[in-house]
Image (cartoon, rainbow over all chains, first blue to last red; front, side, top):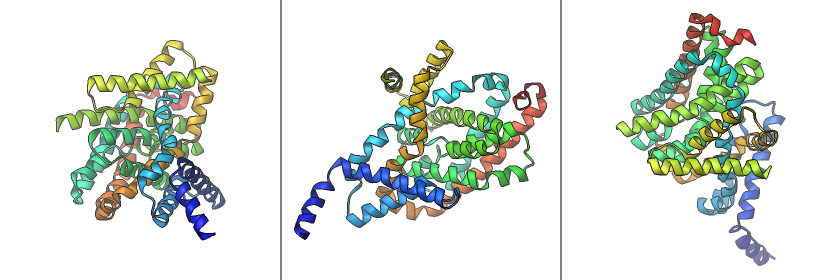
Length: 238
Length: 121
């Protein structure tokens, strides 16, 4: 019996099917927990799924390559999902035209602040070069940030985690900071949340106000693009 | 439906080819996003089926980050060694970016009140 089970495990653990299924299951488990415990932004389903899978990999002694052979089918969809960000962007084209100048100036200042603050603080706290490159694109939405990280010599998996934590932070204390700075303009609140905390910030802004939500979606898409361009230029200069 | 899945992949492929030829460190899918955006600007409307494909992809967007996030297992030593610069940069950097972005946008909107779309809609 034990021998049969061992045999079955040896077979299953190397198939793509097992880890693909477990990834989907872990994410849905995370979603269930998130809803069950009152949608607290601290209980991010992505974070829960990552932690559960890390524990499973450690417990079964499975290496990342074996895991990724299955999970790559999900990972592949990041590229098409990034391309498809053109649709929400196009949907807001009238809003972009109306506030073109303020949006562009804010975008440039915000995008530079996101990069310089992350790299500068990590450098001040003694981070190595690879860590600085990994953190630089953290405000861009994950598929874009990971692509940038890979291109400029950071660690994409590390960037993915940094991006998720950036998103959670913005959703948790974003409103507090905006209130303390007396920012009541909903377009400004939306821009700040979307630019800094991408999808998670956008979801948070949408819950509050329709205008804030639209500007957050816009800021998220444009900042993804601008971060890629700015970092390509900055890294090219170094 | 298959037509728009193909369209998205063609845009991505065009992006990948463009960045390889131009040798710029911009992710191919980002250029693909620009290609698709230009295509939409020419068409002047979003096809219904393309909305369906996008809705599916973006509905599960958070899930797509999981496999990459699990990859942190290969850099667990780096995470432990750089926990302070890592978390410090994220939390303080995020707070600074939110404040600066919000203040700049609010300031610019006050200077150009006629351009303020928040009031129009």
